[in-house]
Length: 521
Image (tube, rainbow, N blue to C red; front, top):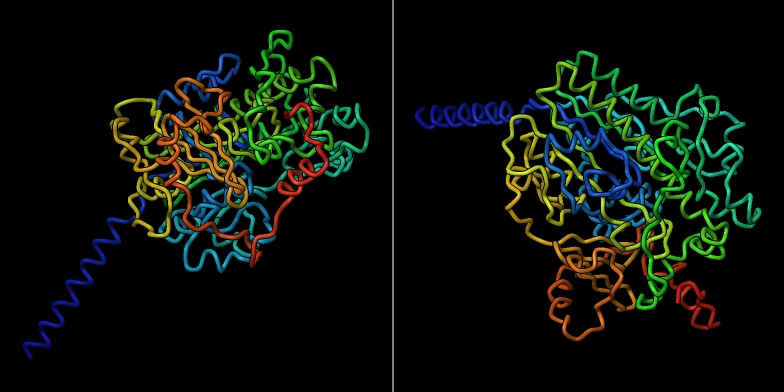
């Protein structure tokens, strides 16, 4: 009898403990999770003297801006899936192919959860608009309902407007310029592989329903913030500009004087100390190379592209402002965590590159911001090197939910509260299989899959113009940073053994034919 009573008492205690645990883990704070596509460090708050971003600048004064944050891989698909899974591409094998990600999803994820699914299963109402994953609110149609309770409609583009894009995939990136791509108009149809490197101011009748997709996204988010939500929400708001093409409503171009636009400083010999795999990354998609096409289109086209990018940055800044103003006017203002991030950066000619798919600073560096109601902070700025992989564990920590062992990033909550707290390790960024960059507070170390290297000292060389890797006096620095490279890189999803890719083929062709372009030498 005594044993039975003792057993019953133990069961009661366990039940009571579980109830208490569940109550402790019940969500109490909302999360507004704002993402901006291809936004590099060109914001006023990060020191860019040309960028007009009053709304983000104002927001960044109300929380903590991480000024040295970096992507796990500088391309939309891999970066966003890495952020939302909390797993690095070098562990998952998710380097780029969305088709292979879908095929390998169950194998890679197992019983692990994407961030919105984890929050939904832990009491959150999950809502999404725009580009949160690569293909919008989800990259996995059969799992969308597992992720989100509510999703916004996509962007409906007319057939006439589609024609301007010459088949460019992703309707959410439209409209293209009124007269089409300047690259194709100047060079001809053989250059369609790079036709997205274009820009243009748009009138309202150039947009479906008179609005850009980002404006529709902002309107949807504002509407949701005016609604009554029966439980705490996780609202993901994904803006698509300043992703190419660099088109935006005319009033945002009018903020800038084209004649006063400054292009990035790029030394003539910028590529002379860069290994060939790095040069292959910079080459881009146009058959003559992206940089060659841009600088030879006209004497002013480089400046015009910067002009277009800045206009798009100011445009998306205004959309962020609409959403933040709606939040601050709502009943959720005092109980909503605000997180703002970009999936990766974007080159505007630095390192003679016009994309993001590489391992240099402009490709990986992004704004990362947190505002946490009720949290005391020591500073509005934190200059430590942090990773976008840290987003998932940070949100989980801020929401007082249970830790997840599979996550490869670190919670930034201690660093949000105290800028003197150190992250435990440098940031690892990857571009495709076995090409890596390690970014510490002061250094960037790059190692390509063929063993070639780059090393940059940011306090003395923030533009990464001087490769120190071959100088013997920096050997110890390389040894220190090299220890953070992956011990075992996952093969690309869908492959059972490594197969050389187009980067290797380009480098081999240059070697065999002596055809390395002069502008890359």
